[in-house]
Amino acid sequence: MTDWTMQGYVGDPQILSKRLGAFARSMPTKDFARRIECDLRTAENIRAGKTWPIARHWLRIWLEFGDDVIEAVFYPERVQARLAREAAAREQARRQRIASAAVLAEARVFGLAGGLGEPEEPEAELEPGPPNLDLFEEARL
Image 1 (cartoon, rainbow, N blue to C red):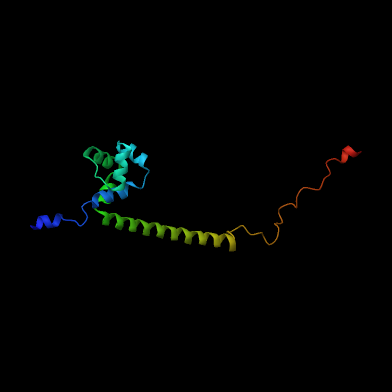
Image 2: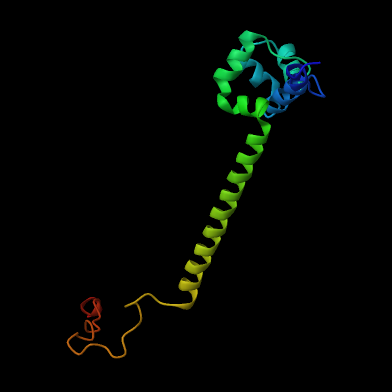
């Protein structure tokens, strides 16, 4: 056999169908069938990884899902690397949110903002308040 033939050989001849099926299983069969404009049986077979879509359905899949489906089917290692990077970024953002929330909680519980404490002595310029008047005194007379 030539080198070209050996490079095209894969242990599982339906690996691409299975990868496409794994990608399509993330949504219900009816929704997938509606999105790619096919009948339910065709959608079920694609989702099960049993068949490869015809050109019309493959075009609808690509138009509907874009480059994500291309990566998932033909370059799964890129998807795994991208998902790992995104998961690490989400985890780092979560840790930063937790750390900043802890700092805010500590500041609220154990400290006062500047100027919010009570003064030591009342200011002499201020009057002590309105005199204690009985507004209904005249009504009793």
